[in-house]
Length: 195
Image (cartoon, rainbow, N blue to C red; front, side, top):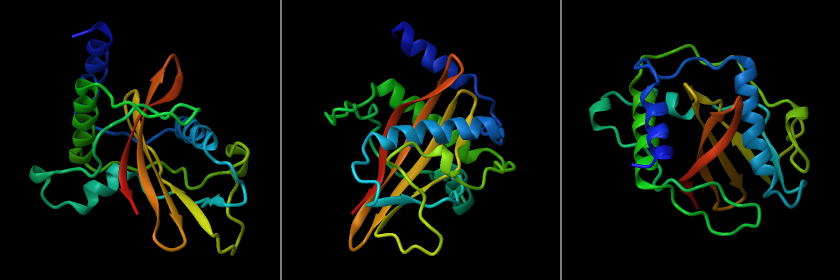
């Protein structure tokens, strides 16, 4: 095991058994800003897609809420990949031990007792880097994106983004973020659904 892999495993193992705690407001905002900055790199047309201001419930908390028996837990999503480079080149898969650590952490969050969710209820206009924008009031967007509130466990967080477009078009991605030197950065992404 390399030093980096060992440190990653230690960071995941250091998360309390209680799982995910409510996100302090500033921390949730930092995570949202990081995910939105990443998304802005791939938004060529600001008029084509808008973001819904209200946040969906945290993805993993919702997974927990829908399950009655966690013993047969099979989380959606597949292979975890590194974040897509700005040039749009291929996303290489994360090493197997990092994929397993992220999957194990997801299971711990889903199995953890219910916690008070973050009070972060919406995306503010100033949080969106250009060319991203909020959907206008009553605007029937041709395409729109819905973002979840973050699930946070120690120095790791998960946030979901779903794109909905007219007809049979769209997709959902779960992003994993890690706090390093006080800053959140995306370390992986997995596809939850696509049509």
